Length: 421
Image: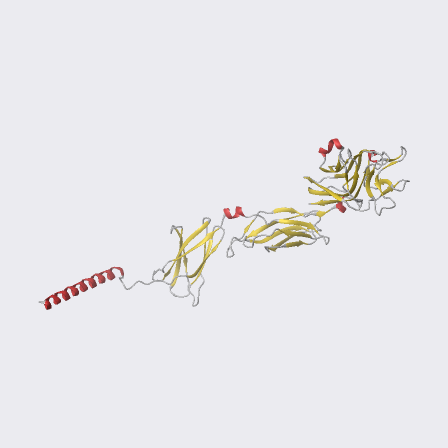
C-alpha cells in the first residue's frame, strides 16, 4: 500500500513538470519568435556639453559594426532626432547638436539601431542648458583703477573674481595717441590682474566687455554689454599753466608781493597791497622762499574783498568728470573765507553770493580759524565737477579775508592739479 502511494506522488510530480514545460515553450514561442532577442551595441562614454539653448551630445562606438543609426529622445520622449551612422573599422565618435532647448536641466535617452532594426538598451543622461536667465545674471568685471602712467600707457587694475565665476576674458577697445583703434583680448586671471594699454590717447576712455563660460565644458560663450570706462589722467599741463610748484609772477618794489603772470587774471579786489597808484597782490616770492606761491596776506589791515584769481583752460575740456586739487598752507582768522572754484566758460569765477552757479567749489576755510603747525606742513583740498559737453572752464580762487592787525591772516597755494577721471 505504501509503495502505491509513492508511485502516485511520483506520477503527480511528473505531470506538473510536463505541464510547466509546455507553458514555458508556449511563452518562448510567443515572445521569441524567430529566435532569442538581439540588442544593438549601445553608445558608450556619453557626455552632454552645455550651451546657449542647446547641448552637444558626444559618445563612442567601440563595438557592433552593424550599427546604422541612433536616436536621441528628450522632453519625456515628445521630441527626438535620428542620426545615420556609417561605422569605420575603429572607434567612432558620434556628436549631435540638440537645438531649441528650454533653459534648465534636460534629460535625454539614446538608443542605437543595427541594420536589422534591433535597438540597443537605452542610455540615459542629463545636462544643463543656459539662456536668458544666465545672460541676465552676468555683469562686467569690475575695474578698481584705470590711470595714465608716465610712459603714456594706461594701467587697468581689475577687481578680483572667484575662480569658478566663469570669467573667461575681457575684450577691450581703445585709441592710441595717433587716434588708431586697437582691439585686444585679455585672458582672465582671477586674482591680482592688471592690464597695460600702451600709448593710449590722453583724455580718452576705453570700452570693454567680459566673456563668460558658464561651465568648463560649455560650447557657447556669453558676453556682457560693452561699457565705457575713463582713464584717470593728470591733464594739468594740457589745459592749465603756471600752476606750481613755483608759480611765476611779477614782483613789486617791496621784493615780496606781486601779480601772478599769465594766464592768470587778477581782479582789483585781489590787489590788497601797494598804494592807489600801484596795487598788487595774490602772488608772493619772498627772499626766504624757494618757490613762488598764490597768497593773500592781511597784516597791517590790508583786507581782501571779493578778490579773484583765475585762469581759463587753454582749450575746451572734453565731456567727463574731473578732480581739481589745491595743495596749500594757511593761518586764517575767523570771519574770513577762501574758496577754490571751477566755473563754466571763459568769463571767470563767481562771487560768494553766486557760488551755486559754479561747476564745483570747495572752501579752503570759511568763517573759522584754520591753520597748520608749520609752513612745511600742507593740506590738499579737492573737489569734482562734471561737464556733459566740451567747454572752456575757468579755475580760480575767491577770497574775502579780514585784516585785523598783526598777525592778520595768511595762506599759500603751492600747486594745483587737474585730473580727468
